[in-house]
Length: 247
Image (tube, rainbow, N blue to C red):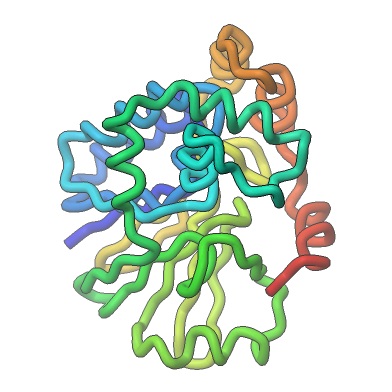
């Protein structure tokens, strides 16, 4: 079995389309959408595409997906910084009742046995919730209690938008990176598994993508086009910022 793990799409349709071209060319048997299809500039289009890939697909819940349907219901968490609230509410307004029902059924984790790798657990942030932060630099002693009891060979996660591959005790941990909103060099990041683990980065036309983003009604369209598509934050700057909040 060959499995593609696509995380943190964040409504970036051009990046998602580019990755799916490579996924189809890789003849995968299964796609795992690892959370945070939303929010972003083209939520309706990305969700429609994700739900109708024509390839067997499993979904797991991301904090962005969860907060988007909460915004639709008027129950968005007070912990969401004010700068993001308008954009999340706008994303919620793009959803239909059918979308809401589909998203709320996505589980927190899923397990799949992959030939050549073994038992793989997929989660958005950590196996216990969709918001915790850990990094490639997080001390191993903080992570051992979280991952050692799982009894799996590999854990695939996302949430921090930075790709990495590290060992924690006897467990391999891979962050798939972000398809649509990377905190590293521009591009679309994902993982291909079976029988090996391949960290992948897909190039796409950034100028054309930024133009498409700017043409949307997304409240943060210009910020997304410039600061997430054309010139994403550097990994080093985000490692320093997120280290203050890890676990």
